[in-house]
Image 1 (cartoon, helix red, strand yellow):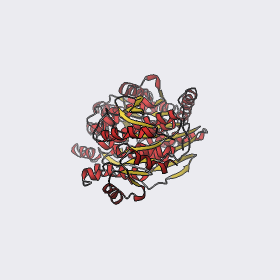
Image 2: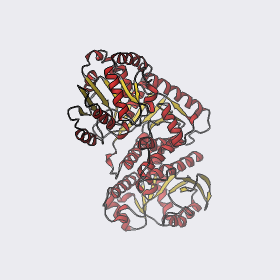
Image 3: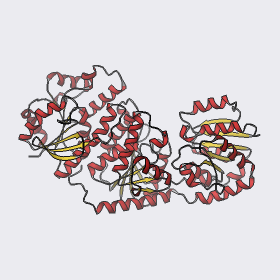
Image 4: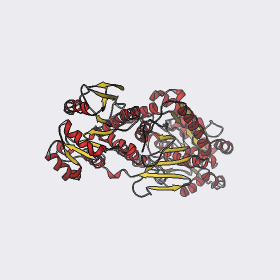
Length: 195
Length: 390
C-alpha cells in the first residue's frame, strides 16, 4: 500500500495553535494503519522518526514578512523543500494530505508537478475566522483558500455545517467534500483516490 | 540544452532594465542553439503563449486572485507560475532573475531536482540603503535565500558582485560577473546623430526614482541658470515625478527643464539626436545600459562615480564622472563638457570603441558557458530526481 504524506505548519512540539493537538491525536492513529510521512515546519532541517511516522522537519528560511499571507507563501516553499526531499527519498509519490490553507499551497504544487491526488482537511476558513472579508488581506487569504480547495481532489470536514459553508461560500462541489473525523474514516476516504 | 527563464517582466510588459536584459539574453541564447522557454507575466493584454524570435513565451495572469500588497502579488504570481511550469515539460536548468521570481525558482528546483541559476540585478538594501519595514526586510531575506539556493549567482558588474557578497553573505567564488549588453539597433539608427546636435541640451533617461538621482540634475540646472540656451530634458516616469516637477517650479526652472514621461524607442531616438550630453546621476546603479546606448550613439556622457557606471566609464577618456550625490560637481561637469569642444570630440571617439566591448551576444555566450559548467557539475553530482515528475 502506498504511503500518505501529511503536510502541516505545526505538530507538537512545533506548536502554533490548536491544529497541532488535533493532528497529534489523529496522525499516529493513521500511521498505525498506513505508512505515513509527516512534513512539518520545525526549528531546523532534519529527517527523523516521530510517533510512528517518517518526519521531514524543515525550518522557515524567511523570518520576516509584512503579513500572514506573505509569510505563508514563503513557508509553503519550505514545506515543499521537505515534501520534495521525502518524495525523492521514497522514490515514489505518495498521496498528499494538507491541513487548512496554511499548508495547502504545497499540496497544489505537488499535485501540479507530480500529478498526485490531493486531500485537504478544512478546520476553519477565512470567513469563519473573520466573519467578513473586510480587508484586502482577508480577501487575499480567501482567494488562496478558494484556489487550493478547487485544486484539491477531496476536502475532509468534521461537520455538516462546514460542508455547507464550503459549498455555499467557496463554490466547492458537495461531491468532493467528505465528512470524517476518525483515522478510520479518513483512510476510507483515501481509498477511492488511491485507486 | 533546455532552459527555463522565469521573469516578472518580458516584452510587451517592461518595467525596467531587468525585462530588457531577459529579453535580449533569451533571444541571443536561442540564436546560439539553446531551447529557451520564458515564463513571465501578463495582465491579460498579451498572449498567454506564443513563440517569438526563437523563444517560447508562456505568460501567467495573477489577477485571478486579490492581494493586499506588492509582496503578496509577487508571491501569487510565483505560485501560479509554478503550477504553469508543471505543464511545460522538462528542463535542464532553471534561471530566475531577482527576488521577484525566487519563490518559483526555489520551488521548482526542489521538486524537479534541477540546478537553479540566479541573476541578482539589484538588491533591496542597495536600492533603499536602510531596510525600514517588514516588506523591505522580507525582500532582503528572499534575496539571501535565492543566493543560498542558487547553484551559481550572476551579477552584471563587479560592484554588484561585491554587494551580493557583502549584503547577502553569498560566497564570492559562487558569483560570476557577466556584463549586460545594449541594443545595437539603437546604435545603427544613430550614426548621423552627432551632426544634428544644436544648442545645449542635457538629457536624462531613466525611471524617476530616488536611486536614479534625477533631483540632482534639477538642482544642477538651478546652479546653471545663467547658462544661456541650456535645456534639460528628463525622459522617464516614476514615483518622484510630481516632486521633481514641483522642485523645478520652486527653483523657477520652468523654461529650462522639461519632463517628457515615458517615450517609445522611436521618440527616444529623436530625443537622443538633439542631446548635447547624457547625464546619469544615479545614487545606485548596478550597471547602466542607457550609458552604453548613448556612448554608442556618439553622445558624451556624464555619470556619477558609483556602481556599474564607475566600471563602464573611464573619467576624461570615454566619459566624465562626478562625485555621486553632488549637484555642484554635476553642474561643473556639465559646464566643462558643454564648453570644451575638443573634450567632447575625444569622449565621443573613445566612447564608441568602449561601447563596442559590450553586446548581448557576448552576454549570452558567457551565460551559456556558465550553464554548461553548472550542468557538468550537476551531472557529476548525486543530487538527482528519484521520483517521476509529471
